[in-house]
Image (tube, one colour):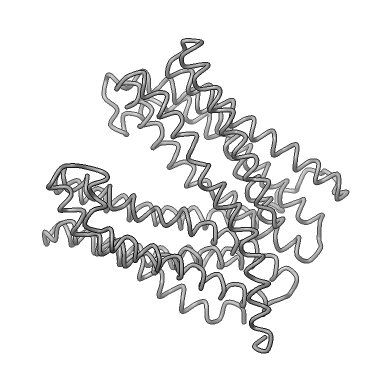
Length: 436
């Protein structure tokens, strides 16, 4: 391997970028559905926009929790595809589709029944409850479609193809872009029209993926059969472990926001600005994490352990490089960046106080994001769950101390830093023996 290191790096770069660049495009296009809805609904009035905002938070949380359908499907399909077992790859996709339909149907039914207490828990006031409830009950009909789209992303990533998911993502966004003004303004349906347009766009994407996957199945001669219940175990196990991992992360970030909120409106507003700037990293680095899931799973499926290690090392280099560049940019822009979000001098000062955290955590967080993808590709789901929970527990203790000790917004960001550094240390330690 050392004798051909230059050639190998070029070879890995080509494969990494071929997967990461389209994945970045899909990740960038994915939030456009909500952005387009916001742009058009904002013209209806503050009540409609507030109702949409509450629903956006609900569906964003649901998407994060159920994203295991992509994260679990990708490495399983990649491994089967790598070792040439087309039928096994087909079985994994069929199982994932079945889970998406079942979970999506249950989620839709739950939202239809529990919409009122859910919106009350989200602090929806009397003026927002009715419009938010109407939007949520319509949008809930797309729950199975959203999960089917998620499976489509995971399946094609496992097949070493991130261009097809990009095409479908752009397509459903165009459908929503056309549908929103037609149904909101031309048909006069208002907020209800935005919900219907989104449902139609999501189901269009889901059906598009199903047609493409069925065409791929026919090309490869994979028969359709209903999977046995026992065959769901690998995907279900991976899914449950990834959900717990994600819940641990969400708990820490929710606690951080809650602690900041206890300190006052200006503090929580400043925390929101800093958090959104930091989370910008995830958009860039998730594309490398996706490449890690697909490439590592594929290499390990073919028994190319040395290539899996070399490609992983290269992706870590790419991630650290991008993170360092972003960190330097945020450090230089630290004094002026908060002014792009607010003119409030108190909030600007508070954001400026934690911008060093945002900058320094860029390369550190980059390594964590890429390692996440690598470990998922290696199907180390249980380790990801346990290591995340361990780091989250320590971070939660720090955040509790922030309240009692009065450490302010800086203390909140020390809690987030504890989470990132804890995960970094555990991932780095385990990585030494991942491919042994």
